[in-house]
Picture 1 (cartoon, rainbow over the protein chains, first blue to last red):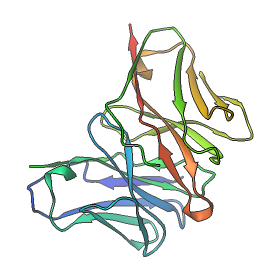
Picture 2: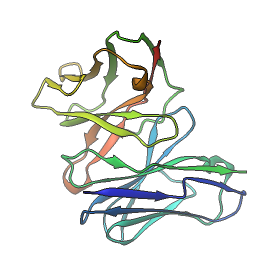
Picture 3: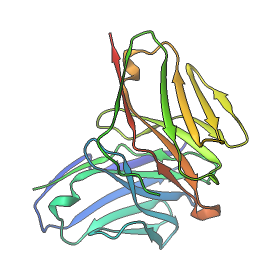
Length: 112
Length: 114
């Protein structure tokens, strides 16, 4: 069966520090991968999605970047965090457009 | 388009009653829809989906209704339980082929009164 792992679960980082959040998927090949951000009490905002290794699409201009170095690995990064980067970050995968997304457990990022 | 909206509306229901959560979607070309449930501090969980060639689909205690004429989606939960308390999101699939992606609604908080 397919599983998705996301870590860390919580992270407190100072303003200006770098960020690296990792997401991996097991049990499937060539998944579509997604990074979402959810501000407190709000909906889900798509940040990046990837349909294959090295293929990244950005949905909104921001202080973050994403990379997909391996088929089932998706990384969210920042060189210098801003206070506004705080939020709940969710990784998700889907096999095709006719399947729903499966989400990871999320990372709660607090920038102080 | 993207939906990062205002603070979420709340629906309060009595335990044991039926709940109806409504969602208006944006694109008449969307052909796949999903309802997700998100408990506090967790990632969204798939509840039920429906394709645009259907008007209704039933699961265990849940039913999704799709009205394409008015671009409206609803989730009905029968005999609502305390464990149903969560934020519920509808999502529509936009785009085609490998570039398709889900766009989420603003979310509704369901609060179950004992």
